[in-house]
Length: 285
Image (tube, rainbow, N blue to C red; front, side):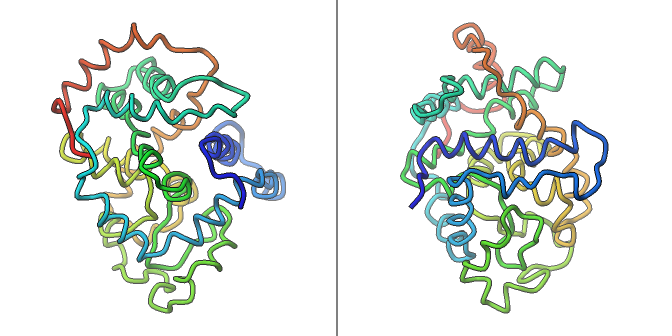
């Protein structure tokens, strides 16, 4: 089996940046002018999505929700969760030796520099904390990568759609109509997306942040919807309105990583005060 260790997170981030950056940075191109990102993907990225698309069944998602949504793993502060995530270190990445906390601070500082509201800055700081699932033994394919609905037909706008043929749900007629088990325009809050760090963190923080922030957290990896326009038939009017915030957040998620190392000690008091505005001293994880 291909390597699916911590370095895969870095490779996935690079792949997503390359796949989605063109239409932000350049005028519209003819269809045949776009790079074939799937063909250029590293073997580990292809293997990641093969495992992801094969394993993310409707039943798997329900099992992971039953396992993690009681939030009985730990009691931690937000900063404590950041320090815990900091133990997920990619020693093999030749391009950066920044820690996970430094990555989070880069995102938050980029948002702060652009004058966005304090809750937006906080969202940038915490949006990837759900990746602590990796530290509880979850495989990478059940934590990171593009998310997509389960329980209905797969869109060809999802990256590497050919791998869905390996998913047992692809042979279930009930799951392979356009809406599947869902009502048309019934709203994404009634739709089960593939399991990962987005949904997990949303469930941990949903009682403490404004709706705009929660949409950013819950759907920032749902690229097929917020970048490709897929699954509009499942979305409510409110989803369509709130997705402008997901799209506003996306550039900071993809492009804030730089070689410059943030001064954690200097920035920590500001961010601890910001965290205290919205969160109690400890949360259940």
